[in-house]
Image (cartoon, rainbow, N blue to C red; front, side, top):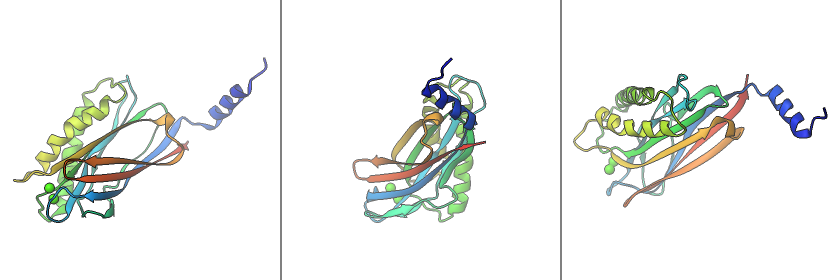
Length: 212
Ligand SMILES: [Ca+2]
Ligand SMILES: [Ca+2]
């Protein structure tokens, strides 16, 4: 049997591809074109989760909480997300699996000044809420995980950061990535968070490499 070049290419790819990918997702920067607060800067943060799963399967899901420390930002400024909090996902996953992102962008209006303590509380609340919401999805379909994250995250944030003045919701970002279709190397993605009196743009990167 004569093998076509496509067949040879597939054979060659299979020989070098372990079927595993190292995927790293990092929040990079936030650009503010208009703040939510009328007077002065916003305290911008992102809360949510990144979950890796195999659709229509009861295989164990891998979920990572996203919680950034509030960034003080004013109209016309660009800020970079600091660690810890910027690297929201870093794991070796199967090529055939999916990664769903569910994020909320918010402006905090109640500052205790104790960001370290707040951050720990927020991270714990998100981990629990997302674990419960995602864990109950026995055989998730493509994209249902992102919806489950977003359903759980708002109440968790408001419970973790109790205050007279709740952090304002600026917008959401939901994304579904098939690992097999991720470009090898780095991809940069940007999304807007816009409302009647605010205008933000957030950038993040996805690094994907074949690993043993
Ligand atoms: Ca506000
Ligand atoms: Ca504020």
